Amino acid sequence: EPEVTQTPSHQVTQMGQEVILRCVPISNHLYFYWYRQILGQKVEFLVSFYNNEISEKSEIFDDQFSVERPDGSNFTLKIRSTKLEDSAMYFCASTLEGLAGGTYEQYFGPGTRLTVT
Amino acid sequence: AQSVTQLDSHVSVSEGTPVLLRCNYSSSYSPSLFWYVQHPNKGLQLLLKYTSAATLVKGINGFEAEFKKSETSFHLTKPSAHMSDAAEYFCVVNGGSQGNLIFGKGTKLSVKP
Image 1 (cartoon, each protein chain N blue to C red):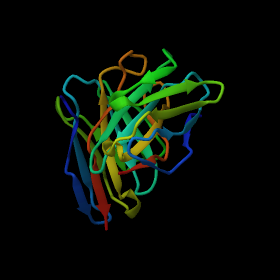
Image 2 (spheres, chains in turn brown, orange):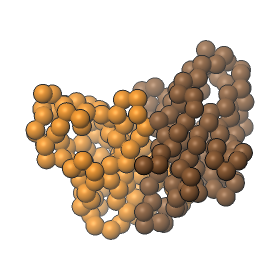
Image 3 (cartoon, rainbow over the protein chains, first blue to last red):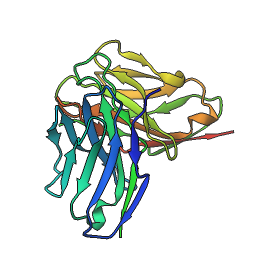
Image 4 (cartoon, helix red, strand yellow):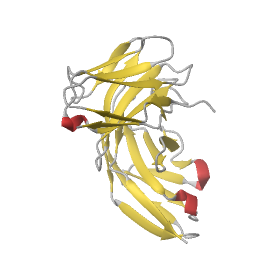
């Protein structure tokens, strides 16, 4: 069964450093998402991406964050200058249809645990 | 604004007994509701979804949920718990037209032998 993959599974970085989290969505999917889960807290929406542009973003997704689909397979989340509070599990998700689609389902990757020291 | 409230942070049942995980939602329009499960060190997996069709929704692994508009609830049930059901369960509502999801805090289900 096709699945969303994410690399690395765990990333440790120093405060102020740039990190890039990588995701390979399911190959025929069109909508892409990033979520994060700070330890002990809810999973929170960060950003959605469709047709090579951001379609929606949350308040969390400030100027330090950016997303890109550099080729036909990868979907990346970049944090320009990491802060301690960016430490979290980051999940990538993809779906074939928009919400109005009858078979709408977001498929999630296993996550990347980001630790900022 | 859309939101979901999972009423229990932890539920413990014995194997073979029923499971009930409670969820209430708040929505300014007709919601789409989902239950996701997360096993340790695994990604989030969709159990079932409600998208304005039948109010009783059947999902994978014997789980089902009933959408009750009058009670703004979407509780998850299973008649007989199995050890492999031990995981964290998230009640989720659609947050907007672009399909972003809003998660509850999660309910950790423990299953005792």
